[in-house]
Amino acid sequence: MSVIVIEFTTLDGVVSDPDGSAGTPGGGWAFRYGPEAVAGDKFRLGRVLDEGVLLLGRSTWQLFAGLWPGRDDPFAVRMNAVPKLVVSRAPGRADMAGWANSRLLDGELVEAVARERRDVVVAGSLSVVDRLREADLVDEYRLLTFPVVLGRGRRLFPEGGSPGEWECRSAERVGAAVLTRYRRAVR
Image (tube, rainbow, N blue to C red; front, side):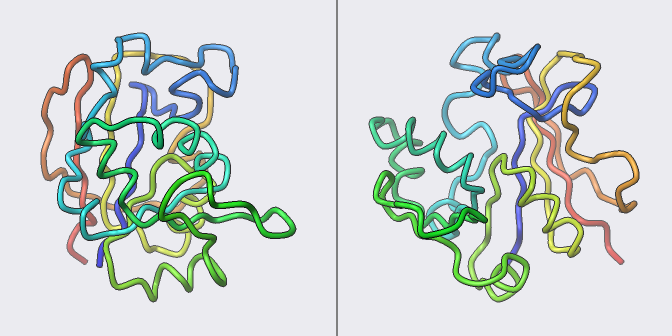
């Protein structure tokens, strides 16, 4: 089992609001390059989506649940079919009927992920990523870096975070961006 974090990022490491849905100044930076820049399996997940599980925070799930169910291209078919675990701190039970194969995560996040036998893909969901990184559970980062410098915004690796060593496994141009894959360095 591996925990794989996928993120759109800028040259200066900003990961917040790549699609502009949060309405932040500078938001929508990844989508300025057209739909081909972000459409399809840009993160090269392939079989991981067929055999793994997608882990999302509630806000990211809500955004995705408004986008994916109405699509039927090959990547959308995978996204709609993959089991989805949703992390939510909201009181009460959220309605997961809006996107097939979705359910709320039972129990505490770190413990549940540590017990998971399938590969876990975390998309966006920065608060979830932060908690998994702090628990030393992230095995791989797949970053799609766009040629944009924003100067401000939420970064994947905030200042003052725990240091770590990663090995670059691959780098390839994907449209206007570069996909890099980093695996945990051998300890």
